[in-house]
Length: 286
Image (spheres, rainbow, N blue to C red):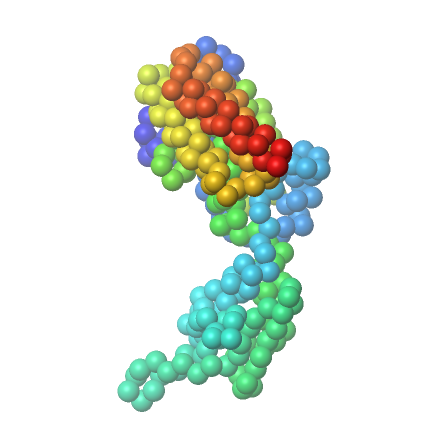
């Protein structure tokens, strides 16, 4: 079944993950709107306890950039980088020749974690409005934040794999379907985002080949990411060792799912683990 066929299929018949011929679920999502950080984090803690995975909170620099971007979405103002740092907010106007003329009204920038507003003229957005926009950006998960979080949830937390380059469509193994359902219920209740995860992953040759290709690509990329340059220290080597152990564990799970061994990947991972462990031992003896 193609991605387009799955999207247009209606209604979808939910198949349990533990019956013959079903290896898990196929998942994709649609993002929509902003979500207050405090509300979502509290809902996750209530459902899963403290320490559960969360989207990455926007830094103060990210909040500043989002504030500037919000101002630039209308037709009245534009923003660009200010030579002193931060952003210049300019008001658009048309000259008699119908050419756009940009007059700098204010500059917004950060002093530590505080939003600073310089107003050389008594024009442009009010200070209170700018600070409110900045506070909203600082305390809100955007759709972009969930675009980063949900793939991490599917792949790293639930042990799935991306079936398309660049993400967007995922296989979740049967062992994680219960956890997937809990996350789906939470996200549908606490946000406007939607996860479509009721599509049974039937054990067909096409699916198994797609999963094999996906886990192969993920493992190869993981091995590249776990490489530590010669000047890397003990902390980098320890982190690399943890990543390699995670690759080993995931490969073992997918060998069981696929019903076949993955000798080239497991051997490459074992070799990388041995090299990393040897380098770490030498670093600790210095």
